[in-house]
Amino acid sequence: MLKRIADRNIWVIYATIALLGIAYGTSIAVLAVHLDAHGIPNVAMGGLASAFALGICVFSIPAGVIVKRLGAKTTLAASLAGYALCVASFPFMSTLAGLSVARFFDGAFSAGVWVAAETALLSRSDKSNKGLVMSLYAISLALGYVIGPVLASLVVRVSSTGTTFVVAGALACVAVLVVLLSLDKSDTSTSTTTTTSTSTNGESEPATSGAMTIFWRTKTSCMGTFTYGYFQASVVLFLPLYLIKSKHVSPDWTILVTAFFAAGMLLMSTWAGRLGDRHGHLLVMRVLALVGGAMVASFVLLPSFPLMCAAVFVAGATLASVSPVSLALQGVVTPKSELGRANAFYNAAYAAGMLIGPPVSGLLFTRYGGGTMLFHLAALWALFVALTVLFAADDPRHASSARALRAMLR
Image 1 (spheres, helix red, strand yellow):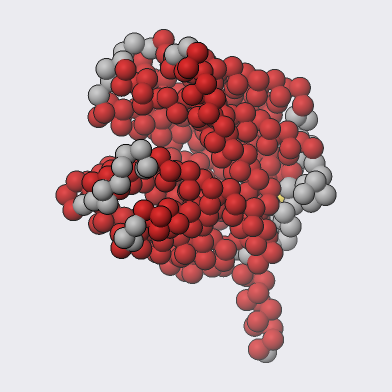
Image 2: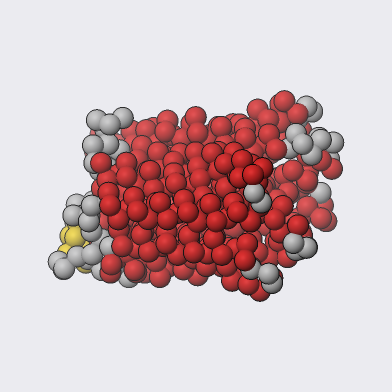
């Protein structure tokens, strides 16, 4: 692994993101309990989740511009500091308005962290290992989500739920120090003073592309992360309710569903990244979405909880792996000078899925039941599969294969 990823700065970013993931896991584990203890109604909790997603959506595009102007290191450190301030202030907010503002900026600074970290990773990796690099990035964040709840439970035993948010802020501050003391100023900065750069097909192109040009180049990556954000935000809210109400699963057992999903992602993510590097990222995304979507649809028909857990494991292994592979594709098709803005579109698409998914899924769940809700999520993944076929040429690997095939037929 160290031979394939020789740049120490990439490992510094992994450590930073792991610390951030622990902070996320620590705060999220007690968020609902903390809000409920302070008399915040369930509807308002959903509004706070929307405020977080809105912060990501609003700030993702500006974050790309900031990374391009100031560089990834400065943006990453500043965004981590901003997140630390927001999460640590959360227990001191006594009104819904104050909590909403804190969650909005929590999302905004998180967007800054993601855009900066992803830009640095993609600019420092090469085309032969981008899938591996981004899959390890996703795993670093996921490991934090596993460790965070354990830490939160320990903190609550000796103190209170409010203290966990302060601990999360402290972890983010440690991540700031890691960035400032260990991360080099990138010599592959997204900022450029040249007038041209090299596109993925080897042709010269303007260093500053139009926004729609960047979006169109990365549309399949954006569609992948939009679909995943839509799916993830929906199942987190409504799958436990479906299990309890329709499948008569004990509420205590529904906690295992998240664990099986995360386990599948952790075990499969690096393999998916390597397969994408070798055989084409868009092709791997298509297969992952096809298998994962089928698992979501089959969930309605499964008669026992162990089989449901197996289906969730496969869904996590496939659908959660779409995200790092789609990031890798984005890194391959985007010139380094435009990675910041491309990653901004990517994270905005993810946040848009988080915003749109829960209301639509909630409406279907309420009116037609959990089965219909799950079928519509499977249909969304099927649509994504169709789009990857329609826009297969977005992946340079497909374009190269097509050219080779045409040459053979002549």
